[in-house]
Image 1 (tube, rainbow, N blue to C red):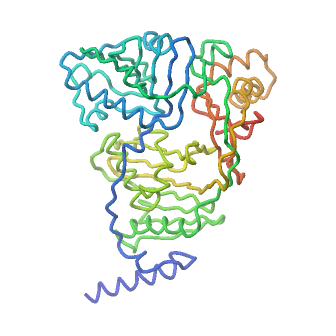
Image 2 (cartoon, rainbow, N blue to C red):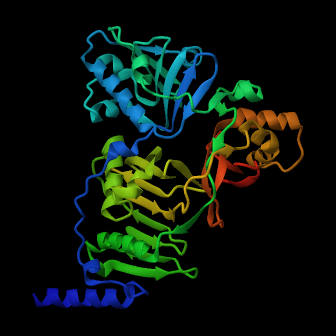
Image 3 (cartoon, one colour):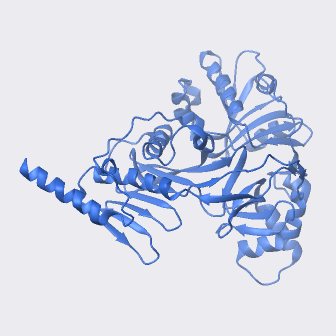
Length: 463
């Protein structure tokens, strides 16, 4: 007993004297941490990137916000097929899939990441027939007047397309668009139709927006310190003797357990970065790993799983990750300011990697941004075709790394063929204390270029 008291006293003195230069530790902050029992909403984090309505005449309308409800509706129709003994699954060509969306009235649900199909069915308790076993993953769900009783599934990155055909006569397409008012959404055409070439990605003809600059600030020092303490408690739960504190010249503080098995770094710009050498365990798959990531964020005060912050975050990227024999996922989350997407010039507000069912990496770069006035009247944004026409040289030289003058038509066609997405949003540019309204232009490879929404001037780009 005396030995235990002796070492406990040493630990407390060590923490109070050297762990935090600001001297703000309290006794509850350094007692062994017992992870809070939190309930996280995995389904709430999975939100479609866009809903595309095909008009059947080569034109489209796009919804980039309030997409979750439509996705939930599609799952109910997928679930309804489980009791259909006559359901059939047919692999179709890319041309057939594209035609069903462009030449007919249609609704397509786009995700920015791939979801394993078998796991999706299992997660929502939808046992699928043997014929569906050929469907590995999806990033699109679609309904079309070309075959109203069918549901289309696509993994566009793998080039795999399927039609699930119900034996009944239920018009799934009509059921999906019932009560859905999309007449006010922006009119879009393919990039090839607007700018030439054969690029089948979509671009709005024009746009109106109420976006205005919004001042932002980092999480308060107290909030940031609270998150840091919560994470530190997890590190200290094993043995405080092996925790060291290292401060570099810029002022970044790193807490290290043992010989670097676990580290927590608090950067001077407010970024928190946690690394952990995960031990061998059983992986949870897409949904299990996502739940692990969300639970970790909620339990340690990074993302509390409820309230305002919870409503502002959704999954933006989900990539398979591995380290040696360990496997899992790296999840990145994007924020929204009310209904407006918030982009960072580089990176994401929150990234969490899960390997073999354990969090191996977490990076938190959270900010606060609040509108102080009511939304202004909508005004016309610079039309996106003109944004490209005015800036294709800038995009070309940045993408190619070639500063020399080239044939203008060659540069233009190069950029047009590389375009993958163009939409509006707020963007946080390095060194700027304002979130700027912008056209967000994504090109092949995932690189993004940002242009002022109303002036079409370059304001930033990802690396």
